[in-house]
Amino acid sequence: MNGRFTRAVVAITAVGALAATAACGVDSGDGKSDDKSGGKAKALKVGWSTIYLTPSWMQQTDKMIKDDVAKLKGEGKVADYQVFNANGDTSQQIAQIRAMIQQKYDVILVDAGSSTALNPALEQAVNAGITVANFDSLVTSEKVVRVGTDQKEWGRMMGEWLGEKLGGKGKIIAFNGPAGVAVSEERWQGAQEGLKKYPGIKVAANVHSEYNLAPAAQAFASAYSANPDIDGVFSQGGALSAAALQTLIKQKKKLVPITGENYNGFLKLWKDNKAGGFSSLSTAQPNYLGVIALRAAVAKAGGDTVPNQITVPLPKITDDTLDQYVKPDQPDDSYPIQDLPQSEIDKLIGK
Image 1 (cartoon, rainbow, N blue to C red):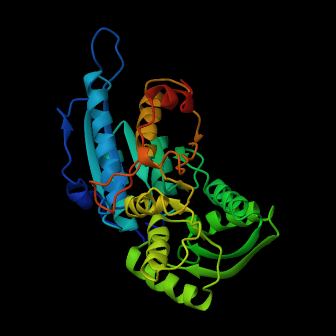
Image 2: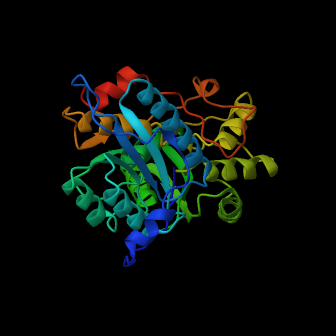
Image 3: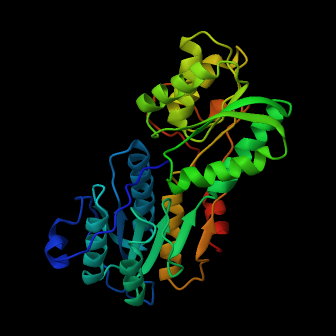
């Protein structure tokens, strides 16, 4: 996912007063988290703090975590699960984390609204004996378990593919996310490293856009109008890729290679135009990062040794594997992904 967060650092007051409004009302379990008899591990009280839930990527992640919580409840490892939605407000997210500390949660999962502002609250949780696992949008604290992908590798992989696809020469448009957003900057840095292997590739325009279809379509149409002779597009987000491909289709232009993401609207366009010669390499910020974080936290809370930094390999969607991902019967604004087998999750968390 891409540029989903507004970064803000705001002073927090009246934490206790916010505790009653912190949860989203997502309930899983009977609320019991006492030690079980017979020497079995304690069933855990788990909370997920997310900066927001509205985007479809977050909704899919929410469902994946809920499904895995149900499995863990059946195994007696989780007793209670709640979601805390900050609705885009970093100050509220911090307050909700501190409320979970007061309410003696055993595990806190975090998709962060700021890479730095949450650090004191999360470290307070760790110092209180709570296992904290952060995924997707990561904080800088090294005291929590962090689960993510390598954003520079994302860009590097795409840049190398595009350079090779174009035979090492040609003009491209670089279609990046908002200027200054860490994810966008890291992906473009990686892409530049990948393109260094192909000095014959020239960047005709470096375009920035929100990761949404409408503004992306406007941004690309303007850049393409000024550079109609391009040979390819480096795009680092699914909505951006869809906007670029839509523009070429609507204007009945040559369908040049465009890198992408597992945004279903883009995958549908790719499938519809593959027979006509359109080609892409796409990847994903996989929703199962949340499941890996949950499993890592549960294992660590149970006494297992878990790495504090877990880098999840980026999936590859190619012309040959496209049909395994695209979902013609699902909305464009969804992010189809193949589940990661439990055996692979176990390897990542060191089990």
